[in-house]
Image: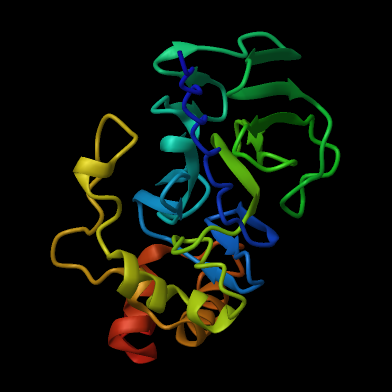
Length: 273
């Protein structure tokens, strides 16, 4: 009897079409150096897309601290999406959670799940913000398996100075994904369209929609009856910062009220505020 050969094995899954490697850094209140090299400043509280692609979901929660005069800083970074196989990782200035369970609870410490991710908490790594020299470093290093040789790498620098309030800096190193966007830009080789106003036109002005949120709750984005500082063009906002610093006695971080008044009502109105 003639033997029937076994069926051929299915072809291997196609390798994802990744592009070049890039770095995006988020620091301060918060300032962002996009993958394409543009500096963009975002100030309003809320939860926003830092990186949004088909497989990588990175969101930041921006809130003020006692030293930022109402301007927001990055308080927590949330990571999820298909690259984490539906899992959810949250890193803040003092805590870290994977699917709601605390991890990295001692210093230094390690955590890993084979084939998914590795994390390390230690005092080794570059500073991402000026003025941090001499302060003890607490840095979370994250490497997520994403089909590339390097993996998706995220560095989180934790700062908990009592005089400043708690916040974090974030650095994302990854291969470009088709169609990605967020506050880190669309990584298309053109820094012009990473301008804050253009990014807001593409991904929305009210933060991450509730149905896409990696956080449990959503922060109101706009105060009632007040313009949103994120709608102030970058050049005018630079003028506002210089004017308000001088008006308020040379303080490093001018007040949100002065910036809004200058941007949307003019210098004369800000002078009487």
